Image (tube, rainbow, N blue to C red; front, side):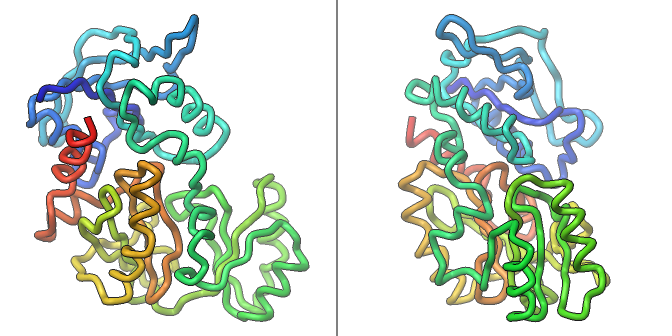
Amino acid sequence: MSLKIAVQCDPIELFQIEGDSTFAMMLEAQARGHALFYYHVKTLAYMDGTLSAEGHDVKVQDKKGAHFELGPKKRIDLSTQDSILMRQDPPFDMGYITATHLLDIIHSKVLVVNDPTEVRNAPEKLFILKFPDLMPPTLITRDVSEIERFRKLHNDVILKPLYGNGGSGVYRTSNNDQNFSSILEMFSELYYEPYIAQKYLPDVRKGDKRIILVDGKVAGAINRIPAEHDNRSNMHAGGVAAPTSLTKREYEICEAIGPELKKRGLIFTGIDVIGDYMTEINVTSPTGIRQVKRFGGADIAALIMDAIEAKL
């Protein structure tokens, strides 16, 4: 089977290939003989019933500093592709949401991974609300009095923007924190949406696990250890990846959410687990598959391509 696969992603020249999941998926697709077309989301255009994008045929190689070769620039009708990998990074803003609406136009003809409708309906920090028994005590609001009440109840909490990513804007605050009012003032100026507050989980010092699921099944995991003087475990924020295995509780979490992920067409997802609690379900542009393989785990890029080929 030779497929035409378009990759909607951030500028390929900026890829940090040693840890880039999109690049791993492109390498795997190319190794199977599939043709790759690369484009940026900003080139999407709809006119007269056709959704198109401007980009390049691309070849990739796992060689730092020379990891891609582009063909001539051209605009293609995206409905001519067999599959589209929607892999641009958040923020999950109106631009991102608009892109999912545009891809919806052709999704009946082209397998978009992940399903654009379900990506739009499953923001990372809101989708988790479907599974209240699996998450830590959580509050979503802009109401300052409710946030103050939540902080007094739990004493030690994490406050973060609802649609943030990569650890940006994440603050830990306790009842004796004199910066609390300043944090809320800053949030009110920066964000129009509600904020999310969660009870601080001390187990984060042992690591924040990224567990990857493919078509609703566990595929692998890494642990992300926060830096000594930081509460954030995100690798963008200085967290260090480490090998790990799954606990009984973590398997229970995956078994609980897996059927829902599969039903929604969310082929490639990553969940974040601290201790006994799931804190996020990442469906937009999950990462970590190269690290899993590097630590001796499954070749998740191959599993993803298996799932795509099976659905086609």
